[in-house]
Length: 317
Image (cartoon, rainbow, N blue to C red; front, side, top):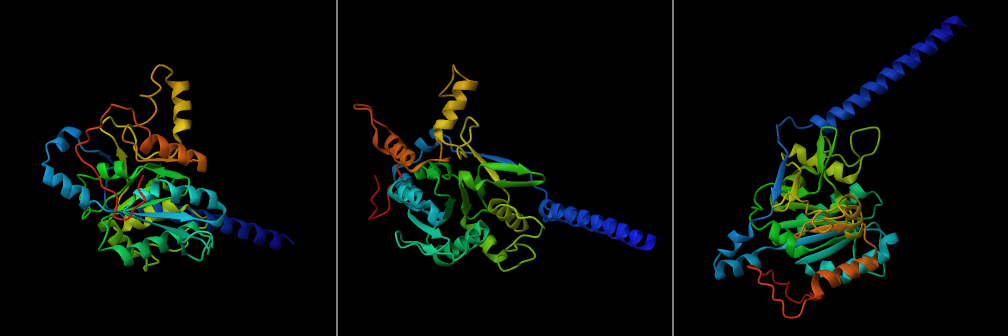
């Protein structure tokens, strides 16, 4: 009896040690999968004064050359948000496509045949690269609860070279891993897409299910894969250091600003050049569309130095 108890205790101890080792390995894999040293960067939008110095011909060329392909990951339960996104901001993408977990008759989409968000993201990126790598230089991925102002995204990217490995949005630090939150939207340059695509078939570096006992979110999985390719998360900010990719709604930001900065509600809220807001309802999407694109003060003329024209045939508002 004593020997049986001793064996049982040994088994418990060995099991505990094994679990601890696996946990440590999991953290090592996600934190140190790539030993290249990288300092976190805060990428800022270009200076408006510099843009005003660009010649008219150069401005026209720039407005035509910036092409953004938009990826929206959806599930059948998101159908009301799906409809709102389709009717609002995605009209301003040079091309937008919806990637769904299953076939949905109501809206046109590309069926990923999986409910797993990481697998959906992987498949969507692969599809986009395989089909559009020669047509678009920037790829923007979002959830259906996100509202995006594509013209501000193009303005932010104006001085960024897509042949460089950009991976940007709203960054979050988790242990040693820094990643771009999918809630604020994720932007990849064509170079980052190339590097990611080269890793998707290498399970040791970019596994379909991750390398740990527990499951991690799709945006963290993406960051792990990109680290192996030497691509690191960058936080996008305006010239005042305010985030332009936001993981909350405008309403929530204003509410927080009224509590924390009652005398500076507007200044304490959001960037004038914000690219995204998240957590919106379908009705809030339409309200945002009205405020951003339709409401104008009579007699007040906006003289932006650069105009991004809508794609041909677009129902752009």
